[in-house]
Structures are given as C-alpha cells and as structure tokens.
Image (cartoon, rainbow, N blue to C red; front, side, top):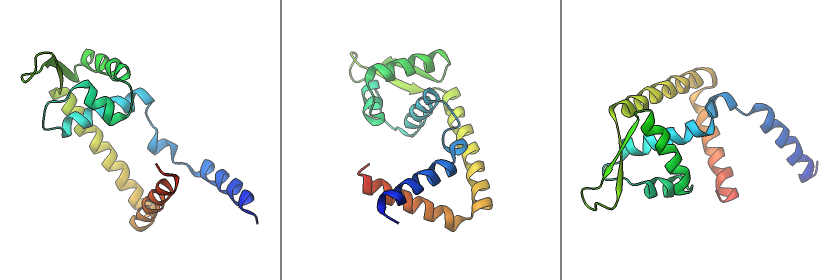
Length: 139
C-alpha cells in the first residue's frame, strides 16, 4: 500500500473512532468559559483580560464577550486593580469556584469510566501517541 492510501485509510479510522462525546460535549463558548474559570481558579495573582487572551490565543474582544456573559451569570467579578487603577482585574466568584470543582468531578468520573472500559495502559499509550502526533505536526 502506498502512503496516500495509508493516509486515506487512517483518516477514515480517525473519523470513525473519534471520541466526540467525551472531548467535545459542550459548545465552543462553554469551553471558553470553562477555560477562563480554570485559569482564574489556578491563578494566584491579579489577572486581567489581556492575560486570559494571551493564554487562550484569542482576541481581547473575544475574551471581553465571554467575561460579560460570565459576569452576568455570577461566575466572575471585575474590579479596579489595587496596583494600577487603570487596569481591570478579573476574579472568580464562589459560584465560579463551585462550577470548576463540579466540572472537575464530572471529568474525573468520566476518566475513571474510561480506565475501567479501556484500561490505563491503553489510555497512556493513546496520550503518548497523541503527543507524538502533535509534536510531529508542530502543534
């Protein structure tokens, strides 16, 4: 078999076995909100929208839209910086923290189920090979 045929065959196998339900069970906006919540949850200093945009590799306008939605839902607050009054600091609320903890618990249960159904060794191989593919593609 030539490389092109191998590639076509593998593309079809990737498409047919992609664990979409596990990896993309939420819409893009929800993933963005989840990312920001985890980023704020793990941060130990003042965080501004520009920090979040850089970490997510998106525009500050995109982050501003997400922050507006999150603030409306009580997940974050925005306040003037104590170090520089011209800057707005983003902080996670108790409701936001609870959402992070709840989501982490859900993901942990799903991962435990995967370990039971697939096996730890196969999952570790999958992660190792996935990283190898990312490295090969320069991602």
